[in-house]
Image (tube, rainbow, N blue to C red):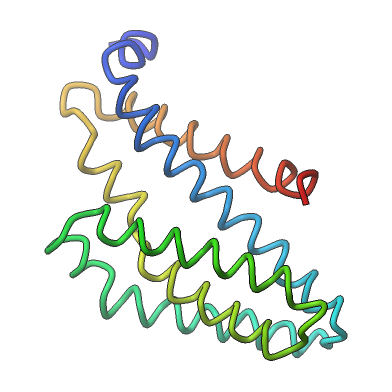
Amino acid sequence: VGLASVLRLHWRSLSGAGVYCALLSGCRNTWMIALPLTAHSIGLSKVGIGLTVAAGRAIEACVTLLAAGQIMDKYGRKAAGLPANIMMAGAFGLLALTKASGFLTLVLAVMLWGVANGLCGGIIVSFATDLTPESCRSEFLGLWKTVQAVGGLVLPPFFGVVS
């Protein structure tokens, strides 16, 4: 089975959930650029920036381990993804206010992002697993990863231009 036929047969999955996951990947990559730059702009040291990133990752890991899978399995992918995306938007909003508001706003943004990213932790793999047809698994997953990688590559510079 060729890539063109897989794309023709499964374009809905790739353009729906695939684009959602590409946007999510792009937002995650943008956050990993924006957070250290914002922390540096308010005067945090390298150690302070590292601790801030680590604290956000710790919150994310706890939420992923304790809640994300259970919520997705019990209530569905959208029940985890939609609130997570709303919280991510809030975290980006708080991050934008950090320069004027200071360190506490940065901490709140990092905590909110950690919960949000943890809540949708594993959602990209879950969507891929749910949507992959058995007859053309490797081709579909190759296209899936390509769509996701394009989002992760294109969105950070786009968000930089927009902001």
